[in-house]
Length: 347
Image 1: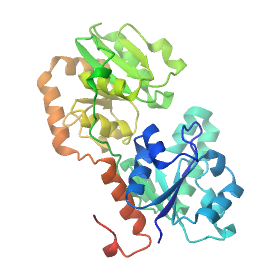
Image 2: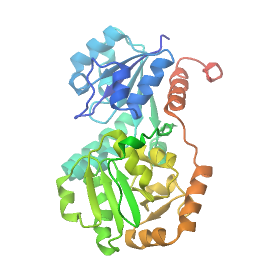
Image 3: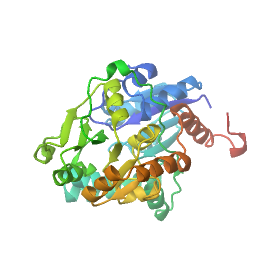
């Protein structure tokens, strides 16, 4: 094989253009596909990032595959993930493997955003994507279990996180609570962030929650004196905010999220939703998972030894890989489709 890969994305509001190099992609998104793509190129791969403008069109997809001649088409997102499979009989270049990167529960998200019937449609489509792709990579134990019920064994590769390099000169925001919680990232309704925002109304005013990320209007009614929205922050400003936190928060009912590994790098206690996160954490051992945020936050604020125990256990229990190490895991999986397992590169 020639180690050529197309990252084939269904992302609607992506910031990456098809003309962007892997280095540019990484400078904008130094995580997930941006980090994997960049580090694969450092390992000798030739990469291309296909945006929705291409992936939504079978004609453009066929043209790209014929011209680029990929060994791997790595599909990411739900909407267009079947297209490289549908168009393969029409391509002159047919010797490629379609590997799907499976993060979310697609039907649940579509149901939350678009309604019940679209959610059912995406449930059906998700199953077809997983059953018909040549291979599946997932960072979710929950999805791995779901795939097994369909007769598909997904290959587990977690998110990565590099050690944060924090520039103290970018500390432009000071957290002011006696006890400070920080949430970063998307606050879409299906992330359930509104629940912890509402919970802050039932806590002393010197316990504060700070949220960073894009604005969602529906959340405005949940904000209060001790639930503070900081907006979308430059990365270094965000890192300085996170470094001041007493607790880092994840509210989605998911067992995978890039913020999990990033949070763990900071060595802070993690507060999360008591659901699928139990597949990733051990509750009250290396994270505190709850559906009663006011009670849980009060305990964390008043029990420093409990916080210390959560942090120490998380450090010992949960391995965190750099993005370079994650890219190597992807390379080994990709190469396994073209060589016997014993011949796959391990270094």
